[in-house]
Image 1 (cartoon, one colour):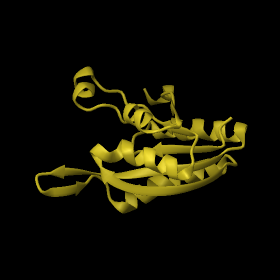
Image 2 (cartoon, rainbow, N blue to C red):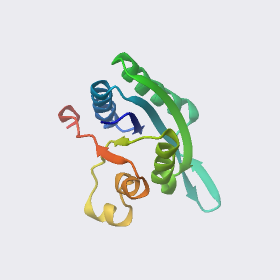
Image 3 (tube, helix red, strand yellow):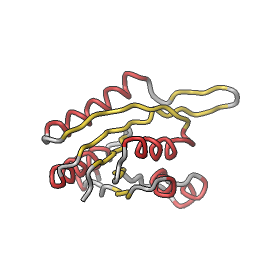
Image 4 (tube, rainbow, N blue to C red):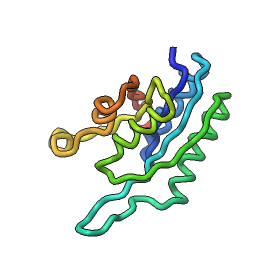
Length: 143
């Protein structure tokens, strides 16, 4: 069973189902969890533009860590930074550094055209990592 789980969270509401599922799996397996949030930036011309500020990122991370801690899970959190094109690589590298044997992500629903030009982070993480990747199902309450 899984012993070290990395859950990557982002500002979307889907993060709640990923955190909840991670907590359930960690309790069942007695696994240790690391919550990762990548502070994404976009490159425009010669400028790098942050897509969220540090305080928002820290609050998001703290919320997920507190939720897992409240479920009785051994958990810590980490922030990382990268361009939007580097998010998947950053997650895969953080998972390797942590020694994760499972990565939990929240899926994002997108249209076919958008997916063609901008591959899913979850697909890229699965290709970049040697750990198993689990997409948390969307919470029905989010519809």
